[in-house]
Length: 443
Ligand code: PA5
Image (tube, rainbow, N blue to C red; front, top):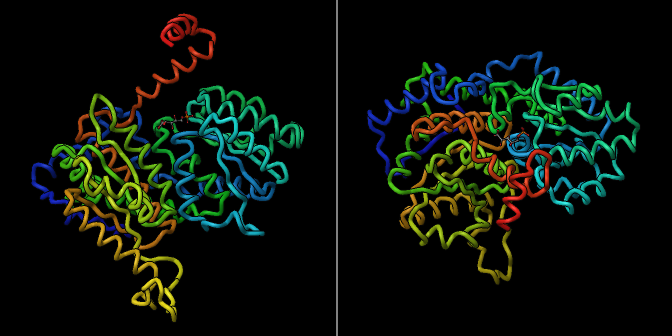
């Protein structure tokens, strides 16, 4: 039995035999490798292929970085960034930055933007701390992380000398291809490989996610065990009506066919904000192509009820919601009685905040249903590694199934190239002379 529960009772979708057959066919394609994009299916059996030796190697490298550095700068973008960011945010104390003492090195991120101010502030803020870096790029040629790495490498070499800097930099990239691989070999950086058949947005359970997570003190064994459990639950040999990922994929495709073009992933736990960011990349890049695809959006509640709530309740009726609901809070905080009761809240005396939060969740669910926004609910028992591991694999498997039901290749991202071509042309990259002239004329 998985830790995750999927509730589709309020979706209004009755899953038929035909829908199940379609999802079964899609799931089978993921396992037989006969579908589109089949050279990127390494993630399907990835959790169960991770052995103790791989975990030990990652933990050993993490221990070295933890020993050397108070701050580890993790450089990457897209799938080379969001998975680690999501799990670290979910597992960390929200106010860790205010603590005087830190149990774990602070993992900060770079190379996910080209902001001069962000980069300068990061270099400035880390000056008084011992620093190490993990540079992650599957292709090894992505511009944003390459620029950040150039600056951070120079900073580390200036501070520690070339030899010690090489002990403080770990590269995670392709086994043979790309500029980062060449650089790592030349400089003698410890290196971890991103398997050829695992695309960026499906790579959180490779060293791409696991090394930064181990550095941050996340129990990666428990995370992987969670993913392994979900891999079994969604396996090819499991009856499709029991397969939670298939159910989610079916329902969201039915919504889409009914004109619900936008899926809002919501949660009442702000720590899950970056889980939604990771999910948006996973679904947006996998399904948004060929003029098709649900637009993935997200909200953090109840905060966004005071900004997006009006639209969700009464705006254009093209929305559906998927709520990640956390059954148990970690701490126990109750509302206290107040003698004056000027705010009129004494009726809540003795109630836990999580109880009030839950009532908000249930109230919103019914209000949105009444407003024409159908829902699915994914319940996790608590925010911990095992549940997050399950959630990651659940969403990955559902994404593969959903993309095949939709009829797209969920494992490519041809559209990501368009902006790069224009940017290089505008920056006069050698080889882009013709494009440069043409684009400048357009501007
Ligand atoms: O899912 C994908 O493949 C992409 O979004 C990549 O993760 C992203 O572009 C970063 O690529 P790379 O790891 O090659 O630098």
